Length: 257
Image (cartoon, rainbow, N blue to C red; front, side, top):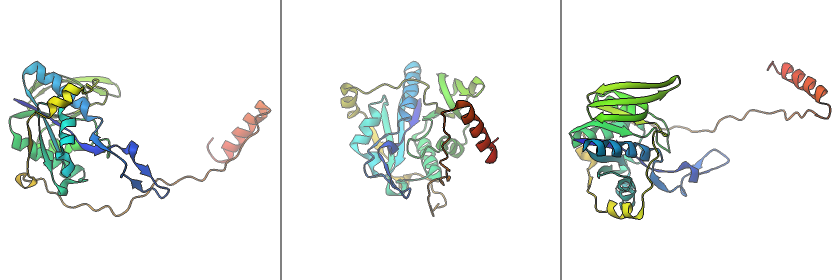
């Protein structure tokens, strides 16, 4: 039995530079395992240890997904093995092709009843890949998962929501998007990094995946948010009572009150 964890090799937006015209320069942004994915790996590792399952990492993307650095970074987090699809056609791919390619990879892997993902990716943050992945597989999807127990195909899942928490009994295959604060992921030590280089990895040609293609989507324009014009009105606070009166009058004049 296998538990799959989908992870993304992506640049960190904190290292990107934003120009005055709203354009984003990614040249200094170093790629890494998306910072929400190690939480999903840790949840999967604990469940795999409890059930004797194999924990397999899955990733799709551009050629750098198959680099030794990318593989070691993922495997050192606690995965037993990794299967990746690295192709120029998937470089910078959007939500739908990414989700469908991951689904095709899950089907190719076989013997998988549970797929874990992070809450979102650090670069795009759309939070849609788990739903697309589940839809392509024909499986249900649950988000905001904070705890998982049982065995794949017969799970007890706890999820957080605005009113508190919800506990569900899930039978059959399922995709679970793990909340960012579900657990504290392990920090790989030197031993983990060295052993990661010895773990099995497989690179699957994109041509071997069926059904991942989608209608092309073209980005025609991007723009930053429109900045509101501010009056820059300053109210003298030397006399507190007068300042409050002036503030209220100004707010009423602008229709705020």
